Image (cartoon, rainbow, N blue to C red; front, top):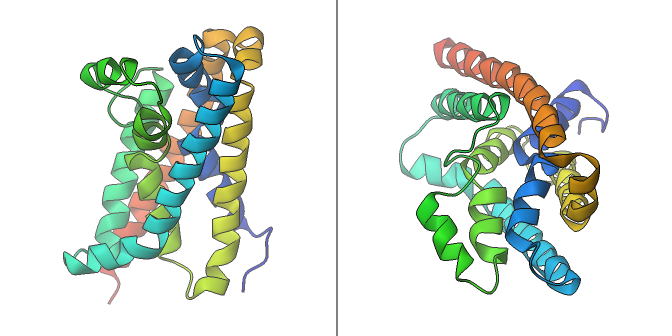
Length: 211
């Protein structure tokens, strides 16, 4: 079993933090809930993060089996996942919203008519979206067995806890950072994610060429 502070876990923490983007998610959550009461905001944040956590954990344990069912190798998925995360990093660097980290216009209109936004669009696709699901599978395929996978899962849960904290403090963060400040942080994290995603592609190509 690997140590808690090895380089791989640090890399996983950085990747999860960048993909889940707690600071960048706070303005989106605020935009969806600022007209509601404080108890409503707390309830939506708890339910949304809870449901997203359940989805990510389920995918961590079943995702590899799904790939095997369709005959997709892990090197191929690592390359595809790296490319997907690279596209996500481009969106973050240019502070633009796309289907990878936001909702479409029609989805926003549908959400506006819902009393609760915990399941849609908060849990999916804002938190447990394509980028997060890809990241979970990229990391969960490495360890062998539940015990070996625990450090990686704990890292994910820690970042999800940080995300919950940012959602609960969305009003304060918006007053302190503002949208411009949140975009600056997102751009820096996007640059880090771009480098990490390229490394995933390189690793996938290398593994596919090994005998």
